[in-house]
Amino acid sequence: MDIKVAHLPGGVAVVTPSDKLNMASAMELREAISALVTAGMFFLVIDLSEVDFIDSSGLGGLVSGLKTARQHGGDLRLAAPNDQVKLVLELTNLDKVLVAYADSESALQAWPR
Image (cartoon, rainbow, N blue to C red; front, side):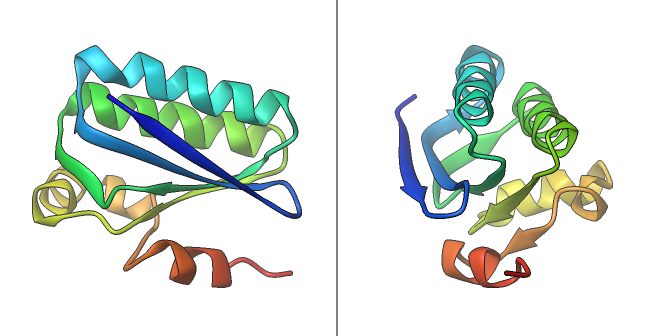
């Protein structure tokens, strides 16, 4: 898995993982999120436009990231989930917890400034 990070003003970062978000890659995402929060980036958008598959471990990585961000007064939002990701979020009811937007820009604009 490759993870791209765009640092934006105001403690905001857009994290773009690619390929599969599964047991093999979930820890890498958790570590990337933890490093960002440690660096003061508390508002995170996880852009899933390049993720073609997610499993329960991947969901665990996202939930862990949400918890980490919120413990520091921030938040985590999802952007551009594909149909498989949306279905998994809906089946697990995590679509109620992990707010998803059509794209990164929409997720960024939804935060109050």
